[in-house]
Length: 256
Image 1 (tube, rainbow, N blue to C red):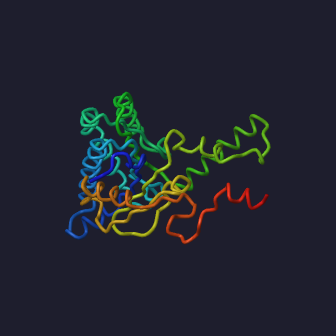
Image 2: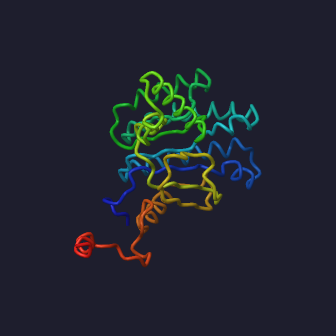
Image 3: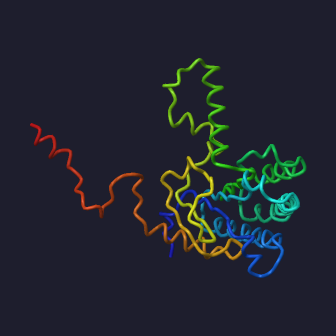
C-alpha cells in the first residue's frame, strides 16, 4: 500500500536493457526497443493513475546517438514517431502532458514536427507530465546552461561572483520542473550514465535487475514503496546516526 501523502513529486527513470532483452531471446535489437516502448506506455498510465506529478524517462542519449549504427538510430526515430502517433490519444484519456528535454533541435525535422504536435495536443492536460529525454546528456545540458548564463551575464554586465545556484537552475533544460526525488535504473547497472547530473544531487536511487522491456506499472509501485520506507536526509544527519541534535534554547542558556 502506497501512502498518497508521501508520493514522490518527480520520478526519473534510466530505461536500460532493451538490447539485452532481445539478445536473451535471440531477437533483433529493434524488437527490444519496440517492447521497451510498450513499457513506457504502461508505466506512464500507472503514474497517471496514482497521481504522480512528474515522470522523466531517459529515452535517447546524446552519446548513443553518436555510437549506435545509423540503421538503429533511424529505427529509433521511426519508433518515436510511431509511439507519439499511437499514444497521444491514450495520453489525452489519462490526462498526461508530454514534454521533452535535450538537444532536440538536432533530431530529424519530421520527428520534431511530430513531437511538437504531441506536445501541443496534450498541453492543457493537468495530470502527470511525461518528459522524454531525447538526444540528451547531463554534461551537454550543463554546457548549454553555462553558455546561456554567460550570455545573460555579458548582456547585463554582471560579475561572476554574483552567480547563484538558482541562476544555473534557470538555464537548465529542466528549469520548469522540480528535481527528481527518486531515480530508478533498470537492468542492474550501478551507474547514472550522464543523466540529470545536477538535478539528482539528493535523489534516492533504486536499482532493479529487471530489464526495461519487462518493467511494468507494478514495478514502478514497488520502487515507490521502497522510496517511502527511506529516511531522506538531503545531506543532513539522520535519526539513526547516533548524534544528538542540539537544542537552540539550551545552547543560549549555556552561553549566558
